Amino acid sequence: MLPNIRKILYATDLSESARHAMWYAASLGRAHNADVTVLHVVPDVVDYMSEEAGLDIEEHFSKDQWEHFNTTVRDKAAMAAHQRVRETIRNCMDGTPDCPLHDQDVIVRTGRPADEILKESKKGYDLLVMGTHGRRSLMDNILGEVMLGSVAGRVVRRSEIPVLTVRLPPEQRD
Image 1 (cartoon, helix red, strand yellow):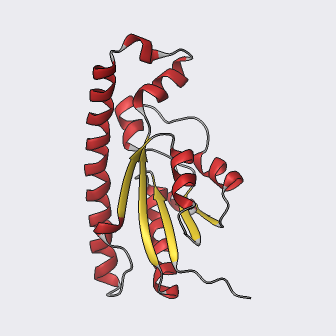
Image 2 (cartoon, rainbow, N blue to C red; image 1 turned 90 degrees about the horizontal axis):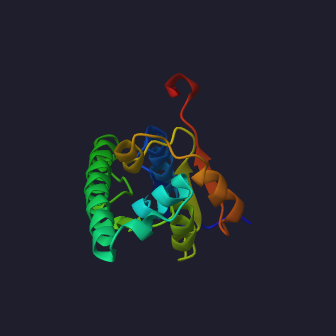
């Protein structure tokens, strides 16, 4: 029996590989007349820094400072995610009048990316689409480094729904 794909979750970290994966999400959405929801997860800054440093940095911040720092980063990332998605939607609409991407279908969360993607994927989606390799998010740019580990790998191993991971073509990889 052929799968019935009606709801697609497209997870983006705002990298080039994620942008490339967006075209797959849009193409599948159009081919199956499916709704496509865009999810961007901003890593919790204090949690990320604590993990990288190997100690609880939160102890060195007051609760107000920690919340302000995370809120500021989350708000900047949300603006960047919405802007990127709007640009991508315009590009999609230019080439495809029935592009399934819409600005109102964008979710931005704060937390551990793999955990938040998996949590959202349990809300009735039939397929999850995401880029892999070359992760360079807004958080990486702020911190000046690339996060170790593979969000896509963790999602693929733990997802209850099919996951399509998309790599950049060889000529576009670093």
